[in-house]
Structures are given as structure tokens and as C-alpha cells.
Amino acid sequence: MFTKINSAAVVGLECEPIIVETDISPTFQGFQIIGLPDMAIQEAKERIRTVWRNSDLTFPNGHRILVNLAPADVRKEGSAFDLPIAVGMLMAKEELDIDLSDSIFIGELALDGTLRHTTGILPLAIHAKERKYKKIFVPAVNVREASLIKEIDVYPVESFQQMIKHLKGESFIEKQEPQPISDLFETVEIEMDMAYVKGQEFVKRALEVAASGAHNILLNGPPGSGKTLLARSLPSILPQMTEDEAIEVTKIYSVAGLLPTDKPLITERPFRSPHHSASAVSLVGGGKFPKPGEISLSHRGVLFLDEFTEFPRMVLENLRQPLEDGVVTISRIQSTVSYPARFTLVASQNPCPCGYATDPGKNCICSPMSVANYQKKISGPMLDRIDLHVEVPRVEFEKLAKDSLAESSTDIRKRVEAARERQNQRFKDSSVITNSDMKNKEIKEFCKLDDASMELMRQAVQHMHLSARSYHRILKLSRTIADLDDSDDIKQIHVAEALQYRAKVG
Image (cartoon, rainbow, N blue to C red; front, side, top):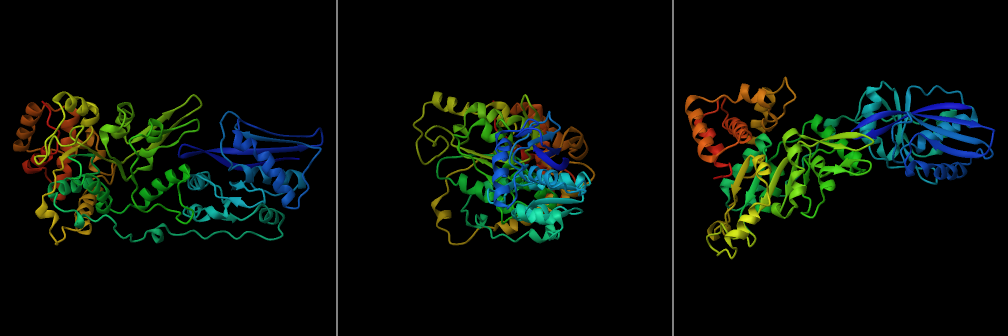
């Protein structure tokens, strides 16, 4: 008998519809899976054979079992096709006449017939909704993730035996009620509070500006000045994610297999801190079957690159296009996939190999040549894409010994959220979310300067040898500073502050 079962394959963050076609005929013995399956899918033959035995079913030995994953020219990977293949074989062998055209099946089978946790369930559920399916059958351990999507009935499957009884009408699986996304947002206790960072008021202001407009920032200073602590405190002043942002980030973590089973939705902004020995593939993503890298896992959050100059130059150059476009495109012979990468880059570095070139309290032992070579490790185009360049000095003893706390992250976050709200209103009719996302069209419309501010910018371009990219980034930064100041217009004082944060060249 011939059957068709609906399933889907995750390609990047999107899904391709897959039809699992099964034919069992009494010609000659054999079990084949065709349609460009990978090794994990080929191994499904042995898993399913064992599952049938452990589910008290008689495997159709002596028959030819042919499973085709259509369309045949799309490469398939992973073990999520176990359940649809097993269901198709069951219907073909038992000759069950059931209309499953409105249903989609996803899940990996264990040898005892239970369903294991499967990656990519959230994008698969979104795909099922978009394709107008009415039902989706997923492993029970993934049901909370799938039930985030409304307007589709989600059925949690504990085991293949349970699936058999459901299909035969002996006992039915109860559908999972959808859970409101808003109920999953929790108040998280702040671990790294700005209140406990002694001194560094200028750097804190720069981080507040960076958080308000999602601007990239570079912290430069001697060892022990607090660069890492400041960077790790940045998430505490970022605004809470919106529901749409939470869904975006959760899709990435679901596909990457990093979504906790007890946490169906990522509600905190990501903070990723890869080691400087990380490869280009681990940073931007890739592999034979492409997966998201660190920059995509940092989407809508923070990517912290400590010891910035220790990263191989060619690895960092891979960040240039994602920093500009907010997306990373991975091209392979078989396919091309894109992952979102709209993150805030926070980089920290020492000013020289010994670290004390800018420290007035300690002598630098590096030669001018070694200092110059050290600073050349980061290319000019890369530095040009960083909006704020901030010196982090050594903290004086008097400030370290103070018992009083500084301004808390909660208070700073309120100002950041107010600035973000101004941006939300400004860009409500476009795809732009923050000031750093603005393209030339938005810059021309929302970053107009008065005569005094324009004259200041003219002098800055001449004396600081600013590129066209730097000029536009200063305009966007000025717009963010004006938003923090609750100002509709960009004033000279806002441009002056933005210019303080640019790297001095020439």
C-alpha cells in the first residue's frame, strides 16, 4: 500500500515542506530510504525496525519497503523524520484509511518507542501554521515550545505506541492548549549591577548610549581597569525583549539545539562571549549542514569579544558584513542560508602588548614598533564599524574604597527604555528597530542638523579624517544621544558628545 505523510526540513531558520512517501509491496525483501537523506536518516531504518519490535508490532519482513523524502533534490538531515516514516509504514502495512492531509509529524524515536527531544520545533510549528495545517504532532518534551504558536492544534506524543492507538482510534492524544507568550516573561534578578562598578562614569555613559541605540563599542584600557566587568554589566541596562524579538531569538536557539527543555522561550537578551581561539565557522556559522554561529546566537543581544586583538585578523574580518547588514549569509554548493545577526558588539583590548601604554601609573615596556604592530591587528574598516571608542582608565583608590553605591542598572535601564520607545515611535512604519539599524534614507529623514551642528561636523570630518561610513555613524550616534536627552532635534551638544566617542586617526 502507498501512503503520504506530511513533514518538514529546517533549512537555516526557514522550513521546506517534505512529503514522506511510503510504499510496501510483497515483491522482494528490502528497506530503502531515498531522497538525499543524510546518515542520521539512513540509520532510521534500524531504529524503526527495533521500535516496531518493542511496540508489539510485526515488522513487514519479506516485503519491499521504499520510503521517498520528496522533493528528492532537497538535502535532508537529522532524525526528525523518524516519526513520519514510522507512521507512514504503519498506515501502509495496516492499510489504515485515515485522512492525515491536515496534519504534520515531527520527532526522533528512541529504541523503546519513546520520542526524544528534537531541535528546530519552533520554526517547524511556525511553518505548519503558515502552510495552513490544522494539527502538528511533536515529541511531548517539545510541546511547550510548539504551543507558543497559536491557530494550530499541537499534539504531544509520548511514544510510538501512543501514536498507534491514536491512529487506530483506540485512545486519543489530547491536544496541548496554547500558552500566552506574555506569561513566560519573568522578572530576572540582575547579577552584574552597574551600582557595584566603582568609578568609570564616562564609560558607563558610553555604555548607556550604546544600549539605547544598539551601537557597537570598543573598550580600550590597561589590565584590571574593569573592562570585562563593564561589558558583562551591559545586559543589565538593556530593555526587555519584545514578544517578536523573543520568538526570533528562540528560533535560532531551537535550530542550534541550545534551547533548554524547561524553558520554551528565550526571554533574556543573549550575552555571548567566545574565546579568542574561536574559528571563523564557530563565530559566523557554517558546517556541512550550516548551523548558527556566535554572532547569530547573539541576535538582539550582546556579542562580547574580550582580548579583541588576540582574535585572528581573518576571523574578525568575517564580522564586517554582518555588522553592516545585520544578517550573515552562508553559501554552500548545495544551498545558501541566512541567519539574522543584529547584535551589539562589545570589544575590549589592551593598548599594547604589555597593556600599560595608556596607564600613567605604570611604565610601558613595549617598543613603538611593537605597539604599532599590535594596534594594526585590527583593520581600519573593522574599527570604522564600531561607533564608540572609549578609554577605560585605571580606577583610583579613593573611588575603589568608597562604601556608597553608584547609580543602579534599574535606573539606567529606565532611561534606555525611554530612548528605545522614542525609536519605536519613530520607526513604527518601517523595518528599522533601533537607530543603529538606520540606512541612508532614514538618516536623511531623522538625522537633520542645524547650522551650528553642521559646521562642527564639517570641522570634524576635516581634522579627524572621517570616512563616509564614520560620518553616517556619528549622525546615528548623535540621534541616540538626542533621544536620551528627550530631544526631537539633534543639537550641537549631541554631536559634540558623539564625536568624543570616535577613534582619533591622523
